[in-house]
Image (cartoon, rainbow, N blue to C red; front, side, top):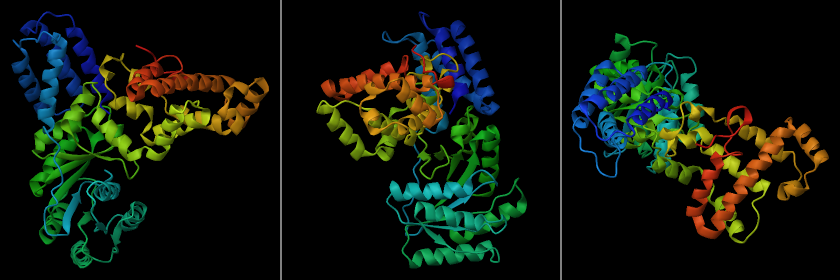
Length: 462
C-alpha cells in the first residue's frame, strides 16, 4: 500500500539530511518533489495544491529542534498535514439508535460492495459485539442475492432471503420488519450498483434511504481508481446524505490517491479500508497510522492489534514455555511460525507496518517474496518427525529424498536450514531477556538467511 508514494517521499527527505536549517531555498526543491510524488499517486490537483501551500507555510522559517535534523523536522510537518488532510482521527460508526441500526451501502458495480457487507458484518460481530442481519436489494445483477447469502453463511450472520421478482423497496421494508421482530442490533443493506452513475440508480437509492432512514449511509469505492474515487464519492454525496466512505482493494493500490483525496473533496470521512479478500480483511481507517505508513515510519499499533486477532495465543504460549525450559526451537516450531506469519498477511504486510521503511533503498519493500512460505512449508512436510526435531541428521541422501518429495531444489532446503538457524538464535535471546531481546534479535532476520526475498534470496541488510 502506498509503495510508490513512500518511495518518492523517502528519497525527498533524504536530500534534506545534513542541512543546517530549513530555508526557503532548500525547501523549494523538496516541495517540488512532494508535489510531483502526490500527482503521480493520482491525488486530485486541488488537494495537492492546498496541501503544498500548508506545508510550505509551516516549513519555511521553521526553527529546527536541537534533536532533529531539518529532514526530520520536514517529515514531522508533512506527517501532521497528511493526518489533517485525511481527517485527523478515526471516524467510528454511529450505531447509537433504537435497534436495528440500519447501515446502507452504496456504490458502483464491481467495487466489492457485497464482499464489503460480509467484511463489515464480521467486524461488527468481532469488535462491536453486535448481532447482524444482511439483506440484498440488488435485483438486477445475476446471482447477487445468492452471493450475499453464501457470504453471510461464511461469516455466520443472519441473511434475509429475497428474490429478483420483488422490488427493492418491498425487500427493504420486509427486512427491516424482520430485523425488528428478531431484535437484531444492526441491519446492513446491500444496494444495486451500476457500471456508471445514472439517474434511475440515484432515484432508487434515494427512495431506499427515505424508506429505511439509515443511521449510516456508506459509499463503497475502489481505491485503485485514484482521484476518480473521490469524484464518484462526491457525485453520490450530492444525491445522498453520506456519513462516510469505505475504500476497497487498498492492498492493491500502490499509489494512494483515493485515500488522500476523498476526505478533502467530499467532506466525508473514510471509515474503513479493505486490505484483502478474506472476511477479516477490513480495518478501521486511522489517518495518523496511514500517514506513518506513507512516510515509511510503520504502524506498530495496527500490527499489534492484528497480532492480537490472528495469532494463536495458545500455540504462542506453548512455544514461549518450551523455549524458557531450554528446549530447542525445531523445524516443526518453525513451520508453525510460518503459518502464523501467513495469517498476518505475509512478510510484505508485516514490513508495511514496521518502522524504518523510509530508510530502505527504492523498491526494497517490493523484493519480498511471500510465495517462498509455501515452498518452505512443503519442504518441512516432506521430512520425518525425527528430521524436523533434529535437522543435524540430514545427510545427502535424506536431503535428496526431501527435495524430491517437495518438488524443490537442494539449495532451497539449505536456505531453509540457514533461516531456521537464524530463528534459533532469536529464540535463544528470548529465553534470557524476554521479548525485548527477541525483538532486537529480529534485526538479524534482515541479514543473510532472513526474510524470503526475490527468487528465493533474502531481504537485504541496510
